Every structure is written in structure tokens, then in C-alpha cells.
Image 1 (cartoon, rainbow, N blue to C red):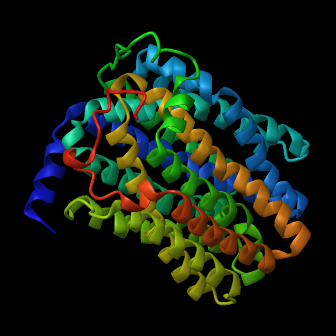
Image 2 (cartoon, helix red, strand yellow):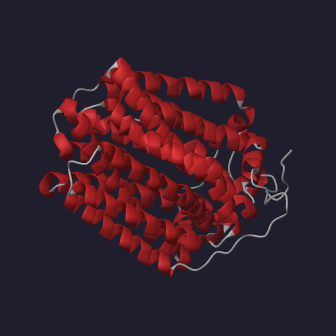
Length: 418
């Protein structure tokens, strides 16, 4: 670990607004990861249907995509902290609704899907506002360190959330689990209230065009290739939605499900800490392609495993290589995006990446129903490898991308890029 890496991390953490943002994001992620596990286990117990698990993701993704473009436009033109605070309030209301359903087990599963849709609406506004807030708070020169810290915080919450959620669910039931989620979201809202304001960025009329985020992304071949690579890897290679079935197959129950959900983050947090302190990546494009290819191979190996411990190890490895992809893509977006367009570009990224988690959940559930559990996971891993091959073949600029230093980058204000 380099002395420069330690120095950059200290500089990031000295920024008061960023520290409060990081705490808010960690507690909110912890709550939402717990809630996602409890909802998925409830639905599986109610239906025993892989497709029902996939529909959880599809419902949230449809709402997220439907509002994402407007949400990014809104985030660029309004104060970011207020948007984050409002969306956390809406998520608190959703948790209260889930808590009510847990106390009335006879209600149709359709009502659960309705609340999931509202969480998708909240996420569609929180996503661009959060990314824009973080990027406007930290100087561009040390943003890669902030991206690693953001990822580390997310992974810590993703480890603790499913593990704690599975334990509380198995010990005290869904009511206690949702009550814990409510407390964690309230803590997140408290830290948000301590954050300083980040008003709308000034930009040209063209930059304030409603669809300019799409125009910018599709005119930048490096960004387009990077987020396309991650989108299809998550779409085909994600297994989170069908982990309740995997836990059932391995005979480990709700607690085991919590550990299966946490395992990728266990690996990812180790990699995130390493990346936070190491020198900046060189040969960024090739490392991104390699990381996603290794992720695909890990998913295939997970499909073939019939051991709980081996499955945990494989999922942890998949989290390590996925974290390389996440941090690299975030750094590419930050390096190439003008300040006045961060909300809209983050929304487009959310449509590509964030919603692909939920659409991927539907794909996983549908494939498991049609093909069976093991063949569907193998299919997802193979398709991830095919995606890496196609993107690597078609995108010469991504392959050739060196470091994310200023000498490698265009002036991001010179948009559209030539």
C-alpha cells in the first residue's frame, strides 16, 4: 500500500460533507439489503416459485427505468441533499408498509409487489442525487479514492445486512427484521440532515436538455462500453434473486441464505480496501475486461458446487472481481462527466446498471423456472463471457484506455466529445 494512497484516503475523509454522506449511504444500504433479503424469503415461503422471486426485481426495475431519466434531470436542476432526504423518507414509509404486511400474513403477495414498486420510485431519485452529491463534494484528483470508499461502505453494509437480516428473521420473525430496517433508515436520514447543501450546477441550455444524459453517454465510446459491459454481466451473471432456492438446495435455511447473500460482499470489501490504498490502476480497460471475465467463470463454478462452504468461497471471489469492475467504472464515469451533467449521466448509468440488477433478477427467476437451477446459472456465466468477448472485440478505445490520469483524458467540458 502506497503512502500516497493513505494520504489520499485521509484527504477524502477530512471532508465533513463527504463523511456524513458516507455514513448516510452505509446505513441506508444496510437497511435496504436487510429488507431485500426478508422480502425475498417471505415471497419464496409464500409461493415456492422461482418466477415469483424474479418478479420482485422486474417490478422494481420497471418503475426505476420509468422515472430514471426525469429523476436525473431533476437532480441536476435541484438541491441534492433535499432529494436524498425525501427519498429516505419515502423508504421509511415503505418499511412501515412491509411491517404492516408482516403482521397480517394473509394478505395477497400482490400487495408486497406494490410496495416494492414504490421502493423502485424512491431509488430512481436517490441514485442520481447521491452520485452527483458525492462527485461534487470530492475533488476530481482524489475521486478514485472516494469511489473505493463508497464501494467499501456499500460492501460492508452488504455483508452485515443479509447476515443480520437472516439471523433476525430466523430468530424473531419478519416483524423484528422490518423494525430493525426502520431504525437503520432513520439513522441514515439523521446523517443526511447533517450534510451540507449541493445546489444545481450551472450549465448550458444544451446540457439542461432532458435527454442530454443519453446523448452524452452514447457519444462517448469509453463510457458506453464500460457500462454496457457491466450491464450485461449483471443481467446474465447475477444470482442474488435465486439464492433462496440455492439455500433450500443446500439445506441451510434463512441463516444460510444470509451468508450466501453476504459472501460476495465479503470478498468485495477486501478488494475495495486494497483498491482504496493502492496506486491508481494502469491499463484500466484491460483490467475491467479481465475482471468481468473472471466474474463469469466464478458464476459457472458456483452453479457446479454442491458444498455450502465452497459456494461461499466462490461467491466471495466473484465479489472481489466484481468490485474491481464497480470501482473502475465509477472512476471512468467521474473522470469523463462534466459537473453540470452528473445527475443525468448517473441516471443513465442507473438504467444500465442499477435496473439491470432487478431485470437480471427476473431473468434468473425465469431461466431457473424454464431450464432448472444449475443450467440457468451456467447459462448466465457463459453469456457473461460472451459479453466480454464482444465488448473487447468492438471497443478498441476501452481496450486501449490506460490510466485515469489527466494526461489520458479529454477536457470533460468539451462536450460532445469527438
